[in-house]
Each structure stands twice: as structure tokens, then as C-alpha cells.
Image (cartoon, rainbow, N blue to C red; front, side, top):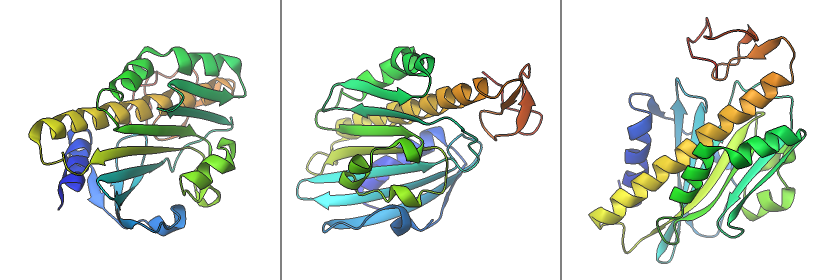
Length: 231
């Protein structure tokens, strides 16, 4: 296992301890091929909101691009939404059918803190997208080489980060990179939670479990199926 791959595996294991199992998961169905040297890894993540994760490593000269695609299989979302976190714009761009949702994402303390943490390592963070495939601009999907029309889920996330190939063997660099990936995972999870809550509010007295998607009375505190606390 090379060092960039090891950094990713260590980052995932810190959060998904005991939940990772390797699978191919048909990455070429969701990612367009590039002219660069690339490799793929697939995971099934149990007991967390995102249930599948596909990672693409692209070697490009002195840097390794790491693309991560999260697929939420059981998401029940009738609302169209799109949150785009980008280093280029230096701001959070959010679109949704309800202004309250847009305001919630932009002003959430966890998201703001994680977004700032991603800017700690120079040239590391590129962008994160969280939302429904039908809300993602086709031009953006094309630039990132995602086959957006093939995504089989109603809710997904995509992240792109860059590791400096010359520095990855430095222990301090590895530690900072792992912390940055943990912040990015927290950003994705929190975004999923807010979008699930937004979907629940639009479905009257019945809501859906934020983790497994089971229909519940709106007054539910815990899900009787998976046991998760409803926020």
C-alpha cells in the first residue's frame, strides 16, 4: 500500500472502525476515465449515513488527486438541494427549494468550523459537493469527471483533495492530512444530516430516520429499527 492510500485508510479507520469492507462497487460506472494514472478502492460503510464510498487516486506529476464519492443508498429525499464548498470561491454556495434550508447550511457552526479546518494544509482542499444529483450543474459534474446521470441514489457527496507526493512521507504532513480528512468527513456527515432534517420537515407528521430511512412519527426520539437518535 503506497503512502497516499495509507493516509486515506488511516483516516477512514479513525471514524469507521470495524465497518469497512473492500468492494469494487463498479467505479467506472460513476467516474469517467482520465488520461492520468489512476486506481480505485471501494467500501461499504455500515452504521453510518453514507453507505457506500468509492475512492479514485489520480497521479499527476508531483501530486496525487484523491476523489471520494459517497452514495447514500437509503436516503429518502423529495427536496432538491446542492451545497458546494470550494477553495476557489472561498465561500459556501448553497441552493435549495426552501430559503430556511439554505440559511441553515450556511450558518451551521459545525460546517463552518470544518470548512475552515480544510484550509489549514496548503493546496490540500479543492472542493466538496453534497446534495441531490438532479441539482448538481452538469458542467461541474463534467469538469470533475463524474457520471452524474448514473448515480443510483437520491443523495450523494463528492470531494476532491490533493496530496503532495514529495511530502507524504513526512510524519507531520501525514498527521495534518489525516486531521484534514477527518474534518472533511465531518463536513459531509453534517451536510447529510441537515439535508435529511430538511426533507423530514417537508413530509408532515411522518418523518424519516436520519440514518436508515424508516418512516417514523414526527415526535420520535429514537428509531425503533436502527436505534439512532433523531435530531
